Length: 498
Image 1: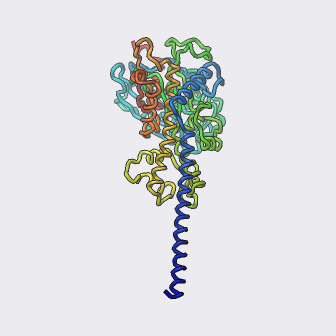
Image 2: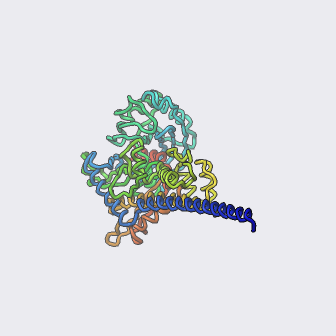
Image 3: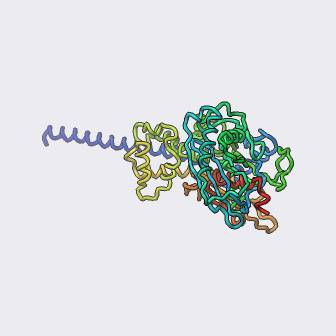
């Protein structure tokens, strides 16, 4: 072989070796990145651990806070608000009742015709109205005049299939989903606005009195029979359909719970004990916190950067507003530290709250063999294309970790409430049924979350007790529930139920 040929062979050999080295280096770099990404995921999974003993500690911590909140105002992170609802609907209520549900940028007006014992809701109608943004930051009179005018219009359209008993004043249940300090079943002062409302002259005023004055200005003769929180409304709606309902939980954008407490077990209650001996307590459980809650660095960062740092810690790990955001934060770290999506961090991934919980739920519940739903959501929402099946499987696993922790911690909260009511054991052979009314988009639409919550609760109480506990979907507590509470607190109640 000539010198030239040998030279070429040597050069080619070097080139091949160099190319092979580059490939090996790339593979090593790639596998190094993958190992790092898996480390991040594993570490997060460990931080989110919810073994049964830990969940029982969370439930016990919840009970301690419940006792403290019932003992004195401000005695606990749990407000344990007295709702002044001391008798829930029985199913025997009769007549026509209205509800007004104000909780965001829209409000709803409803009417329901109740048929009395055995007949339930005979007829119902509702209308949704959006609130002009200018009224959300204007004056109290302007907002309530607008609402009263729409309510008067709705009443004027009452058809012949709705029957008001002659000589009776119409009655209304008012759901007002903003922080209120209630002083009776039909009065409460606004503590502060949330959700984009800011009407300064309204803070510290009685919201029922403001609505009543506006209705009077519009010539609307209607009595406001009950001021209601949506969680208490869900409990009322559940009880109307099922006499065994004693607690309610909302799992939606936010989360809350309410339950029936023995009136003598509320030390901060200084009034006369109600005839029923019972009082519905609005727990405001989203604000629960405990050293037993399994929190990661991502949760602490989310809290620090939120509008209400240090508040609503429990809500921030279980509720719909936050689950997708936790997933995004973990993915962001995997992109930054393990180049999970390539050499640059996808810009969209850095946008807070871009990954909503409905998207997370769709990815988590993707049953297609090649995880098409995950791929299309990554492409459409985060503008990330060309993901491998292996990567998509990791994303599904991450969604599973976040949803499982949230669902299992929700179940621990439910156990806390059951224990406080003495329903976590079977006493002396009695098999009292306990039904929990649940509502909210997270519970209704995120199947994996719902099933995990229910399975965990069964695991926590054991097989025998789990046969006495039922979770029931109770729809539209903030609307129908308010109308039902107007009925059970009607000024004409005696004549209906006699």
